[in-house]
Length: 316
Image 1 (cartoon, one colour):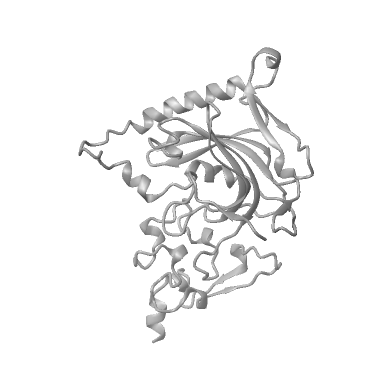
Image 2 (cartoon, rainbow, N blue to C red):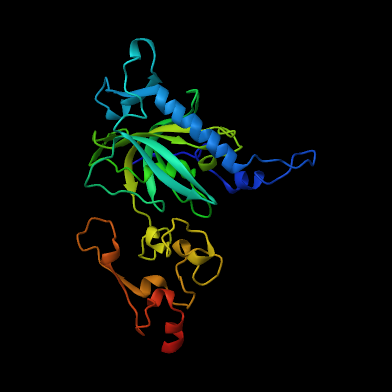
């Protein structure tokens, strides 16, 4: 399988996060707008857009299902009788907590994806095609060839929160074929949708958000379960408090500065995590579920060995 690795505007970097609190070149402080105020404006803008626009899926004119498109247009003139996005059955909404705010994230789920395929988590990797636009439908980023994105990244934030939160509601295609030129044809049952992202879940004051909402039309071709540190525990299971955040102190059991999902020795006892658990992919599907891991607890204290540094001490 071949696909492109693309590092464009989707990636939100630590440099951007720092710039939000930095200074101008002339030394003057950057005055950021209030996040709640921006969100309320964005929510009103997004909901007005959803109420005044409709969407349709244009079928591919070739044998390549990736060329299907979700087209959005204004409800007016000869399209005055169209059902608005806001009133369509395909419109979904989920709440996303970030800081002190709870955001409403709207997305169109034209097709969720093949039921039997893996549904990614925020700790996984996805292969997608996408187009990013503002609500004036000006394109700022796109890829019509499959692109691989690590939703978490390796050492810091991965792709923007709003896009990641939408992608984990979809699944990939049931099969694919590799062509002689290395390109891939995916079966026409992949996840397909559009997400409308408030600036606070995108780039906030940075381009292309600039305090305004943006949207991504996308096709989720595949979700790939990740074990970033190769310790046998899928990365999503290393979020011990299950809050979707992998970089906080609670996710660094041995306080060595490396979060559990990147740490081959989670409790810092000198014994590799892989040697303190037993993994058995019973159905041989390549996807490890929690019930396929034996979390050994030698001293029966309720803390599995891989998170219990006392075990190594007791065994010395």
